[in-house]
Figure 1: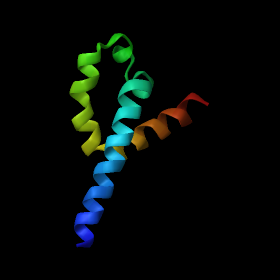
Figure 2: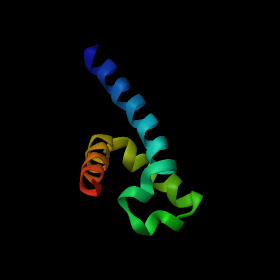
Figure 3: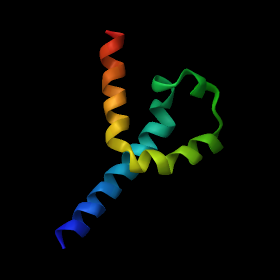
Length: 67
């Protein structure tokens, strides 16, 4: 039962982070995404939902390089 709760927690966190990243922060990690369309952002949502820990790591390392 704990694995099901862990999966749900991972899914909910991934969904929230994916929406936040795809619509507000994608331009910080990829310069080519500055002029991306709404369709592109929808396409990358599932991938970000699955890989959200790596996305957060990438964003945190991008912040450290800009200082």
